[in-house]
Amino acid sequence: MALNSLFCADVPLSNYSLTSATFWTFVYTDCAPNIRELASELLVAAEKYNIPHLKVACETELMRTMELDNIVNRLIKSDMNRAFQLRDTALQFVAQHAAGVVKQASWELLCINYPHLVKFVCEKMALYTKDLKNRIGEEEIEDIETE
Figure: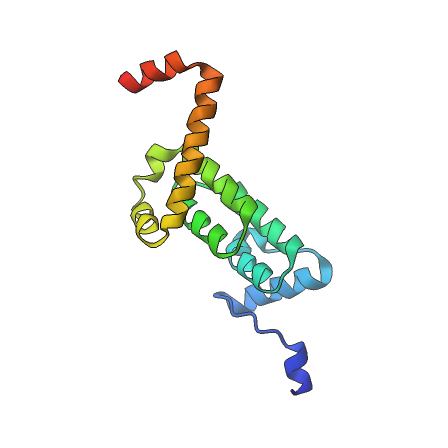
């Protein structure tokens, strides 16, 4: 094996030059200056190259920016990159905003292509509903359901 191939890691990322520079900056300085723009791409690299601190930073940024129109993507990305903190937060977001989430075009694709994630969503919804019932009382929940 050539010396260059020992020290040159392949970082196949979509916005290669900027993402690669940010990735290597983080590896050497523990700082990712463009993490807000590149968190999704950097999460892939952090998982691939086993850089836990970068992975946590990316998960934190992706959790901070969760919205209805990106939540399904966040859930899928968390599953593909074993980002369990991101997955749990995304599942909680889905449970809290279920009516809006299921109206997203991406929701149907999730149901078709990632049925195991739908199972996680259902489990989280069940826990969320149970917790909600315990907090505000079952009578009030039944009144809401009948309206």
